Length: 292
Ligand SMILES: N[C@@H](CC(=O)c1ccccc1NC=O)C(=O)O
Image 1 (cartoon, rainbow, N blue to C red):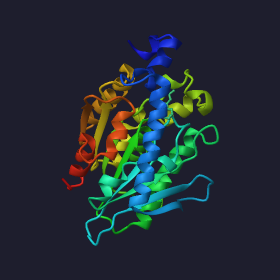
Image 2: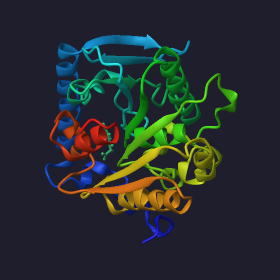
Image 3: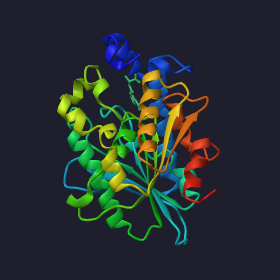
Image 4: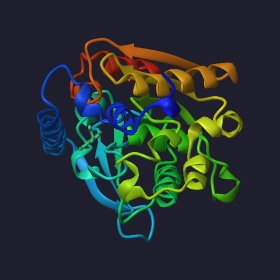
């Protein structure tokens, strides 16, 4: 069924990721998610050298955390992670969880903070993640490759970074690869749902911030980027459709894109498992960086 034909109840269920987990009840899966991210981030902060709260702008929430490998290697890649949480939950404070297996392979991990709703709105969050990427490449101009990874709302923000007209910025980032995990790429279906209550997006805001509408811009700005669109086997049909349709649009535009339907995962476990070096997506990310 098309989202436009759905009753409000059904649409809100489709856009409630916790209600589709096969592991636990909805409330429990979210609690367990936050706990897993927190514990993973604590572990990473205790093992890695870190720079916490590095400003990338003058705004209040415009700070990022850097997880640094202990290495003398000159071939150092950097992954910027953009957290999820429907643009209204989570923060960079629990977003360093995937750093351990990456720093072990000489990869720098950056967890970006941005101003979630209701304090921040969609235009601000998109502007913040774009500026954070510019700041990182100015700070780390010697790295061998820049990669992006985003989960859920963070995958949306990562796709918006790939779709940036950089002519307004001081530098043009060369993003080699992007992992878009269980993302939302068309914001129109959520306009009438509870998700939009704190966001208060108008249709105009939703359209200009929908990666699905910006594929020609992405092709112009990120033609050399290797894109992985990953979706959980147990994501809702609407979430699965969001990924599938965005993947097809990128593919049709001639971009270097692959689709990963990750078996035995749900909306939350698909990203939580990045703490594990043996997890399929961890290995794929390292392989993309030539580190397998
Ligand atoms: N109402 C949403 C809540 C949600 O998506 C969420 C809540 C807390 C932390 C993260 C979340 N989502 C994705 O990262 C749900 O049903 O899952």
